[in-house]
Length: 206
Image (cartoon, rainbow, N blue to C red):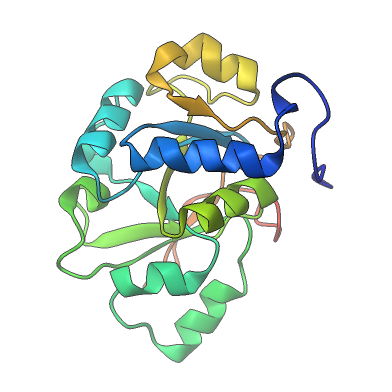
């Protein structure tokens, strides 16, 4: 899918730069933002702000034991959170990004349990959606990325669905288009190579 460089109507009237500034300000204040990924809307917050993460999990009704995905615009932002990777594995991971593959990789011991859940790994991804990457770039660090829905409910694929299903639980909505024909990202275990969750593993789309 070709992503529009700039939407033209409705909630898109403010400039992209202004909307990104508002989203970043919300994250810095401990808020929750909704933003488009390739297939669905995501919810994000500062991963190192525990109260924000706990509020996000409560909004989704998601068990903290499951852990969360972190996204960034470049692997150098995520790498400090991970144990060193063998060169061959690193090349294999980078070949799938930006795009629809989330990798479970061994995390450093200091990475908070509210991000890892019950696991010793951390889920990480470089998204293919330009708006999600622009948000990460403007934020300047990793960002929580989990689907915009209550647990066991379908994820939102439009800005309207985000508002209808999550209401005031979302502090800022960075509206944009998603590919409604796509599936959520594939999840792979980095050490075993096992596919934990299948997806449409085409680079640049989820």
